[in-house]
Figure (cartoon, one colour):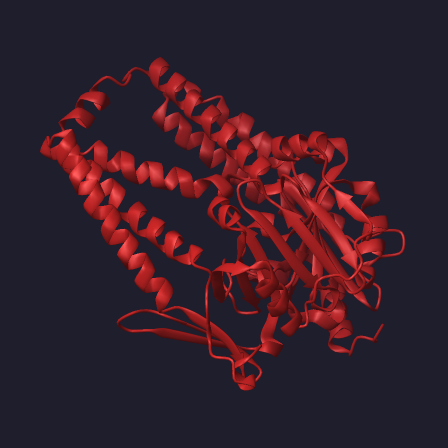
Length: 467
């Protein structure tokens, strides 16, 4: 099925023509609305304008589909698209980290899927995106890349049920999933508010402090609701299967996404205990792999909601190379004399926020000491959370900035590590230690004893034993 075998480059499914036409229509719709509203044009004129735009969008979509091809040749995947000035992308098969399948409403209507080819240097989407590929073609591409579909159908699954899904959405909402829709509405609102009707609408908004407070509360509530909906949209139908040496993930409500991740390419896991989850002993677990370095957190999540005490057991089952005997505890911690260095910066930052609030609302001056105390407490919690552990195969780094995060990394997958110290730290014989994995995730422990930081640095310079 490659061009090496005499088969010419393949076109995408015809659904790509409709997807491209929809892209063009989305770009036209706000312009048409502005012309109708600002120009005071009749509904009939708008209908004619819309039909012309629809025709142009369909023709442009067809041309884009007819000039888009992909093929495999010379041990690489090639993708070519464009009418007047075609662009061509080639990815060696060995560089492919993962191949994700995404089904939006249009893809489901046509029975196809969008294939995102992920590489170590890719962006938030795949380096190559084939937006309309039939299931057998997608299966073939995954097999060519060394990511074949499982042969067995009775593999054990980890599934996120309806109740835990709601808890996951409430305790760690995913605003990033809804932001594209919010951005589109904001762009449309900006166009609509630029005329006289928009000015009259702005004049009707409250201008007193109480009215502004109510409006802000309504906006905050709407944002929270959207973010919770974003969590439901992101993780509905979440299932996880370990198929021998790879993880297979399915998730999503509006867009059904499937991913196949070889365990050998997982550099680390990140255990995230959010502010709303930690009191209940809950966390999420994210994978750190170069193929998803710029993706949203939802795309990196391998366990959306799990009890913290169950993390060691689940890691042993799902990612054995990152399993720790007894979990991430115990950790080596910064010295007691570093406590005030953790507490002072957030205390000052919170107090400055209170001062800024007082400048806007003079009666709010009690917020300054209250926020300073809150910042001090946050700093002390950061001190209590901070720590590290090195067992010869793994490096564990735990930090806290509101959420407590524990990075568990394979030492043989560390990209860099080092120490640093400011002038004040050098005088106190303290230093920071940081390490990074290939996904870009960096773990950092501040204000260690300088000898401890240097010793850890030297230990990591030695080759890690193979497992």
